[in-house]
Image (cartoon, rainbow, N blue to C red; front, side, top):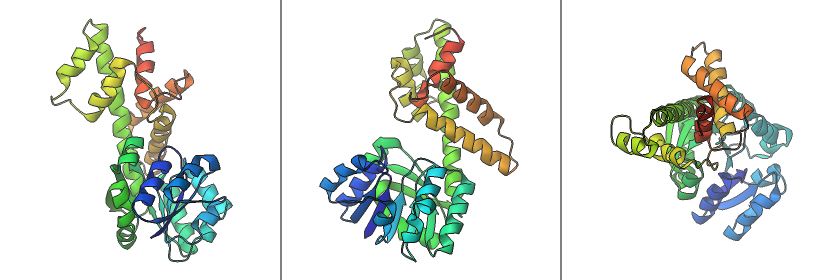
Length: 289
Protein backbone atom coordinates (compact mmCIF):
# COMPACT_ATOMS: atom_id res chain seq x y z
CA UNK A 1 0.00 0.00 0.00
CA UNK A 2 1.20 3.55 -0.71
CA UNK A 3 1.29 5.41 2.59
CA UNK A 4 2.45 8.91 3.51
CA UNK A 5 3.42 9.88 7.03
CA UNK A 6 3.61 13.53 8.08
CA UNK A 7 5.62 14.27 11.21
CA UNK A 8 8.64 12.10 11.99
CA UNK A 9 9.36 13.15 15.55
CA UNK A 10 9.76 10.90 18.59
CA UNK A 11 6.59 8.98 17.70
CA UNK A 12 6.40 9.38 13.94
CA UNK A 13 9.92 8.15 13.19
CA UNK A 14 9.51 4.62 14.62
CA UNK A 15 5.98 4.40 13.21
CA UNK A 16 7.22 5.22 9.72
CA UNK A 17 10.03 2.70 10.11
CA UNK A 18 7.52 0.00 11.04
CA UNK A 19 5.46 0.78 7.92
CA UNK A 20 8.59 0.31 5.80
CA UNK A 21 9.41 -2.96 7.55
CA UNK A 22 5.86 -4.17 6.89
CA UNK A 23 6.45 -3.82 3.16
CA UNK A 24 4.48 -0.65 2.42
CA UNK A 25 5.65 2.03 0.00
CA UNK A 26 6.24 4.96 2.32
CA UNK A 27 6.80 8.67 1.73
CA UNK A 28 7.54 10.95 4.68
CA UNK A 29 7.76 14.63 5.48
CA UNK A 30 8.89 16.54 8.54
CA UNK A 31 9.21 20.27 9.15
CA UNK A 32 12.89 19.67 9.96
CA UNK A 33 14.03 17.44 7.11
CA UNK A 34 17.04 16.14 9.04
CA UNK A 35 14.72 14.33 11.46
CA UNK A 36 13.13 12.41 8.58
CA UNK A 37 16.34 11.66 6.70
CA UNK A 38 17.25 8.48 8.67
CA UNK A 39 14.13 6.84 7.22
CA UNK A 40 15.71 6.81 3.77
CA UNK A 41 17.85 3.90 4.98
CA UNK A 42 14.63 1.98 5.68
CA UNK A 43 13.36 2.57 2.15
CA UNK A 44 11.15 5.63 2.69
CA UNK A 45 11.08 8.55 0.28
CA UNK A 46 11.89 11.75 2.17
CA UNK A 47 9.94 14.68 0.70
CA UNK A 48 10.49 18.42 0.85
CA UNK A 49 6.83 19.38 1.30
CA UNK A 50 3.77 17.71 2.80
CA UNK A 51 1.95 18.10 -0.52
CA UNK A 52 4.70 16.17 -2.28
CA UNK A 53 4.56 13.38 0.32
CA UNK A 54 0.80 12.80 0.05
CA UNK A 55 0.35 13.17 -3.71
CA UNK A 56 0.26 9.44 -4.55
CA UNK A 57 -0.75 8.03 -1.16
CA UNK A 58 -3.77 5.82 -0.63
CA UNK A 59 -3.57 6.56 3.09
CA UNK A 60 -1.88 9.50 4.80
CA UNK A 61 -0.97 9.29 8.48
CA UNK A 62 -0.51 12.52 10.43
CA UNK A 63 1.58 12.43 13.61
CA UNK A 64 1.83 16.16 14.24
CA UNK A 65 2.11 18.13 17.45
CA UNK A 66 -1.16 20.02 17.85
CA UNK A 67 -4.45 21.02 16.27
CA UNK A 68 -3.16 24.32 14.85
CA UNK A 69 -0.18 22.53 13.30
CA UNK A 70 -2.44 19.88 11.75
CA UNK A 71 -4.60 22.65 10.32
CA UNK A 72 -1.57 24.51 8.97
CA UNK A 73 -0.08 21.43 7.28
CA UNK A 74 -3.40 20.34 5.79
CA UNK A 75 -4.84 23.63 4.63
CA UNK A 76 -2.13 26.33 4.61
CA UNK A 77 0.61 24.09 3.18
CA UNK A 78 -1.90 22.50 0.78
CA UNK A 79 -1.47 18.88 1.82
CA UNK A 80 -5.26 18.42 1.76
CA UNK A 81 -5.61 19.65 -1.81
CA UNK A 82 -2.74 17.42 -2.89
CA UNK A 83 -4.42 14.28 -1.52
CA UNK A 84 -6.16 12.03 -4.02
CA UNK A 85 -9.94 12.04 -3.98
CA UNK A 86 -11.08 8.91 -2.21
CA UNK A 87 -7.88 8.63 -0.19
CA UNK A 88 -7.91 8.45 3.61
CA UNK A 89 -6.28 10.76 6.14
CA UNK A 90 -5.63 9.27 9.59
CA UNK A 91 -4.94 12.03 12.10
CA UNK A 92 -3.04 10.48 15.00
CA UNK A 93 -2.22 13.76 16.73
CA UNK A 94 -3.86 14.53 20.06
CA UNK A 95 -6.12 17.51 19.36
CA UNK A 96 -9.49 18.82 20.52
CA UNK A 97 -12.56 16.88 19.35
CA UNK A 98 -14.06 19.99 17.72
CA UNK A 99 -10.85 20.43 15.72
CA UNK A 100 -11.08 16.82 14.55
CA UNK A 101 -14.69 17.30 13.44
CA UNK A 102 -13.80 20.52 11.61
CA UNK A 103 -10.86 18.91 9.80
CA UNK A 104 -13.01 15.93 8.79
CA UNK A 105 -15.68 18.23 7.35
CA UNK A 106 -13.16 20.31 5.39
CA UNK A 107 -11.42 17.21 4.03
CA UNK A 108 -14.78 15.74 3.08
CA UNK A 109 -15.46 18.77 0.89
CA UNK A 110 -12.30 17.84 -1.02
CA UNK A 111 -13.33 14.20 -1.39
CA UNK A 112 -10.89 12.93 1.24
CA UNK A 113 -12.07 10.60 4.02
CA UNK A 114 -10.79 11.05 7.56
CA UNK A 115 -10.34 9.29 10.89
CA UNK A 116 -9.20 10.82 14.16
CA UNK A 117 -7.00 8.20 15.80
CA UNK A 118 -4.90 9.45 18.72
CA UNK A 119 -2.70 6.97 20.53
CA UNK A 120 -1.47 5.97 23.96
CA UNK A 121 1.71 4.05 24.65
CA UNK A 122 4.49 6.56 24.06
CA UNK A 123 7.70 6.01 22.17
CA UNK A 124 8.08 2.45 23.48
CA UNK A 125 4.68 1.56 22.03
CA UNK A 126 5.55 3.25 18.75
CA UNK A 127 8.79 1.28 18.49
CA UNK A 128 7.26 -2.07 19.45
CA UNK A 129 3.94 -1.78 17.62
CA UNK A 130 1.95 -1.90 20.86
CA UNK A 131 0.16 1.45 20.74
CA UNK A 132 -3.44 1.72 21.89
CA UNK A 133 -5.35 3.56 19.16
CA UNK A 134 -8.71 5.27 19.77
CA UNK A 135 -10.54 5.86 16.50
CA UNK A 136 -13.38 8.19 15.57
CA UNK A 137 -15.00 8.28 12.13
CA UNK A 138 -17.04 6.15 9.76
CA UNK A 139 -16.96 2.36 10.11
CA UNK A 140 -15.99 1.69 6.44
CA UNK A 141 -13.03 4.05 6.78
CA UNK A 142 -11.95 2.26 9.95
CA UNK A 143 -11.98 -1.05 8.06
CA UNK A 144 -9.82 0.48 5.32
CA UNK A 145 -7.32 1.59 7.93
CA UNK A 146 -7.01 -1.75 9.75
CA UNK A 147 -3.86 -2.86 7.82
CA UNK A 148 -2.14 0.35 8.95
CA UNK A 149 -3.39 0.14 12.51
CA UNK A 150 -2.16 -3.46 12.78
CA UNK A 151 1.39 -2.22 12.16
CA UNK A 152 1.10 0.28 15.01
CA UNK A 153 -0.82 -1.63 17.67
CA UNK A 154 -4.41 -2.27 18.77
CA UNK A 155 -7.18 -0.03 17.40
CA UNK A 156 -10.76 0.36 18.64
CA UNK A 157 -13.49 2.20 16.72
CA UNK A 158 -15.34 4.20 19.39
CA UNK A 159 -17.81 6.30 17.37
CA UNK A 160 -18.17 9.18 14.88
CA UNK A 161 -15.66 11.93 14.07
CA UNK A 162 -14.21 13.51 17.20
CA UNK A 163 -14.86 10.60 19.54
CA UNK A 164 -11.37 9.20 19.09
CA UNK A 165 -10.04 12.48 20.46
CA UNK A 166 -12.66 12.47 23.21
CA UNK A 167 -11.51 9.00 24.27
CA UNK A 168 -7.88 10.14 24.25
CA UNK A 169 -8.83 13.03 26.53
CA UNK A 170 -10.47 10.52 28.88
CA UNK A 171 -7.26 8.48 28.80
CA UNK A 172 -5.16 11.54 29.61
CA UNK A 173 -7.50 12.61 32.39
CA UNK A 174 -7.07 9.20 34.03
CA UNK A 175 -3.29 9.25 33.53
CA UNK A 176 -2.82 12.81 34.78
CA UNK A 177 -5.05 12.41 37.82
CA UNK A 178 -3.57 9.02 38.76
CA UNK A 179 -0.01 10.37 38.54
CA UNK A 180 -1.06 13.02 41.04
CA UNK A 181 -2.70 10.48 43.34
CA UNK A 182 0.39 8.26 43.34
CA UNK A 183 2.74 11.19 43.91
CA UNK A 184 0.70 12.67 46.76
CA UNK A 185 0.28 9.29 48.46
CA UNK A 186 3.99 8.43 48.31
CA UNK A 187 4.94 11.89 49.56
CA UNK A 188 2.47 11.64 52.45
CA UNK A 189 4.05 8.38 53.55
CA UNK A 190 7.57 9.75 53.20
CA UNK A 191 6.62 12.85 55.23
CA UNK A 192 5.31 10.54 57.93
CA UNK A 193 8.56 8.60 58.12
CA UNK A 194 7.92 5.62 55.84
CA UNK A 195 10.33 4.35 53.20
CA UNK A 196 8.82 5.50 49.91
CA UNK A 197 10.22 2.56 47.94
CA UNK A 198 8.80 0.09 50.46
CA UNK A 199 5.41 1.84 50.41
CA UNK A 200 5.26 1.43 46.65
CA UNK A 201 6.29 -2.22 47.00
CA UNK A 202 3.61 -2.84 49.64
CA UNK A 203 0.80 -1.34 47.56
CA UNK A 204 1.81 -3.08 44.34
CA UNK A 205 -0.44 -6.07 43.72
CA UNK A 206 -3.26 -4.72 45.87
CA UNK A 207 -6.48 -3.01 44.80
CA UNK A 208 -4.67 0.33 44.33
CA UNK A 209 -2.11 -1.17 41.96
CA UNK A 210 -1.84 0.30 38.46
CA UNK A 211 0.60 0.80 35.62
CA UNK A 212 1.03 4.34 36.90
CA UNK A 213 2.04 3.08 40.35
CA UNK A 214 4.41 0.54 38.85
CA UNK A 215 6.12 2.71 36.23
CA UNK A 216 5.71 6.29 37.36
CA UNK A 217 5.86 5.34 41.02
CA UNK A 218 9.28 3.83 40.42
CA UNK A 219 10.40 6.99 38.63
CA UNK A 220 9.26 9.00 41.65
CA UNK A 221 11.20 6.76 44.02
CA UNK A 222 14.31 7.13 41.86
CA UNK A 223 13.66 10.84 41.10
CA UNK A 224 14.02 9.92 37.42
CA UNK A 225 12.00 12.48 35.50
CA UNK A 226 13.74 12.26 32.13
CA UNK A 227 10.93 12.97 29.65
CA UNK A 228 9.03 10.07 28.10
CA UNK A 229 5.82 12.10 27.97
CA UNK A 230 6.41 15.74 28.87
CA UNK A 231 4.68 17.77 31.56
CA UNK A 232 3.88 20.38 28.92
CA UNK A 233 1.96 17.81 26.85
CA UNK A 234 0.06 16.51 29.88
CA UNK A 235 -0.89 20.08 30.77
CA UNK A 236 -2.11 20.66 27.20
CA UNK A 237 -4.25 17.53 27.37
CA UNK A 238 -5.81 18.62 30.67
CA UNK A 239 -6.61 22.04 29.17
CA UNK A 240 -8.17 20.37 26.14
CA UNK A 241 -10.24 18.13 28.38
CA UNK A 242 -11.58 21.13 30.28
CA UNK A 243 -12.32 23.03 27.07
CA UNK A 244 -14.25 20.07 25.69
CA UNK A 245 -16.12 19.59 28.96
CA UNK A 246 -17.17 23.24 28.87
CA UNK A 247 -18.33 22.93 25.25
CA UNK A 248 -20.68 20.06 26.06
CA UNK A 249 -21.84 21.38 29.43
CA UNK A 250 -20.02 18.87 31.63
CA UNK A 251 -18.58 19.81 35.04
CA UNK A 252 -15.14 18.24 35.60
CA UNK A 253 -13.93 19.46 39.02
CA UNK A 254 -11.25 16.81 39.49
CA UNK A 255 -9.70 17.50 36.09
CA UNK A 256 -9.88 21.25 36.81
CA UNK A 257 -7.88 20.81 40.02
CA UNK A 258 -5.20 18.75 38.33
CA UNK A 259 -5.00 21.11 35.37
CA UNK A 260 -4.13 23.84 37.88
CA UNK A 261 -1.44 21.65 39.45
CA UNK A 262 0.18 20.84 36.11
CA UNK A 263 -0.01 24.51 35.12
CA UNK A 264 1.74 25.44 38.37
CA UNK A 265 4.45 22.91 37.57
CA UNK A 266 5.06 24.60 34.23
CA UNK A 267 5.23 28.00 35.93
CA UNK A 268 7.86 26.61 38.28
CA UNK A 269 10.14 25.41 35.49
CA UNK A 270 9.08 21.78 35.14
CA UNK A 271 8.00 22.06 31.50
CA UNK A 272 10.49 19.56 30.07
CA UNK A 273 10.24 16.94 32.80
CA UNK A 274 8.32 13.72 32.36
CA UNK A 275 4.68 14.12 33.40
CA UNK A 276 5.48 12.07 36.49
CA UNK A 277 7.42 15.22 37.45
CA UNK A 278 4.20 16.49 39.00
CA UNK A 279 5.80 14.77 42.01
CA UNK A 280 8.33 17.64 42.12
CA UNK A 281 5.57 20.26 42.25
CA UNK A 282 3.74 18.44 45.05
CA UNK A 283 6.98 17.81 46.95
CA UNK A 284 7.94 21.49 46.84
CA UNK A 285 4.56 22.45 48.30
CA UNK A 286 5.42 20.33 51.32
CA UNK A 287 9.02 21.43 51.74
CA UNK A 288 10.27 18.13 50.36
CA UNK A 289 12.56 17.08 47.53
